[in-house]
Picture (tube, rainbow, N blue to C red):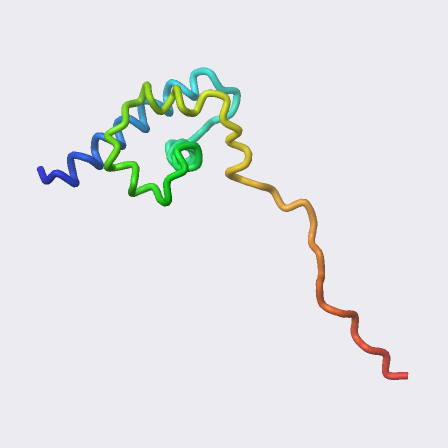
Amino acid sequence: MSELSHKINFLLRALDKASAEINSKSVSKISAGDIESALVDVLGIDEPMDLLELEITAEFIVDQLEGYEYAKLHPEEMGHINLEPPPKSRL
């Protein structure tokens, strides 16, 4: 197994384990993808691929994301604003 494959598998196992633990304490279902996005946000890294270099554990993930507001990862549309000027009258 290549080093990259090892790092990917290590991260996926950590995310899955952290997801199970976080979901056991949460009312709503939080996906491993949302946990990955939240971790990128909390750690202030540029992209998810950067997580591969950290070799983080599930325990680290759970600790870092304690109290995280996952709702901000999926903002809902509150309305629509039309910024185009109204059509000109032909009168």
